[in-house]
Image 1 (cartoon, each protein chain N blue to C red):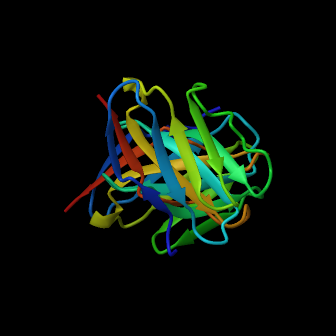
Image 2 (image 1 turned 90 degrees about the horizontal axis):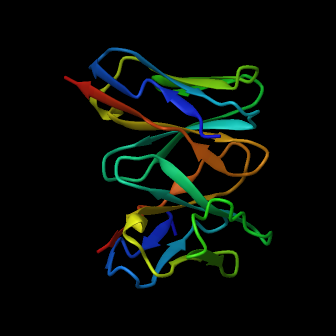
Length: 109
Length: 114
């Protein structure tokens, strides 16, 4: 039931792009993305509702393929502040999130 | 308040003791969630409250864990007869509405059972 994220870890130089994937075996109502920095609480990035929409703000965007129950998070022109662990959270008919395994992203100068 | 408030921020307890963790959600948020995060791991769902509905307790790992939410606001997570495997960060989150809103997490309570 837990969604699977890939890759497990990403190392980038500033300015490089990255894609993080989230895959579920269940029919989904929505997908959330969160970023957690070391020692801090997760911070909400965006929500994607079923319907295959793509959302984004600044240089971070995401898509949701409802048929495949997959979501991808796109980080373009990465900044040092993007470093952290990214979690997707999937929501089915029940109003609770099941979080993925996490992807650790490190951005170096 | 402006954010989700959790207390205490840190708790060290002896094995076998009971502990209570408190969460004060954002005013007006009807949904409240508890998650647990072990060191270097992901977020494990524990329990969910929505308004006056019966809570979803499907994530509680054993009958030593219980939670209540009084007056649709403050929630308390109680762990009885704590074990070393209960050591983790316990995170509370609240949400205003199902659509278009994400969770706002509190800073968590780091529980250490010695």
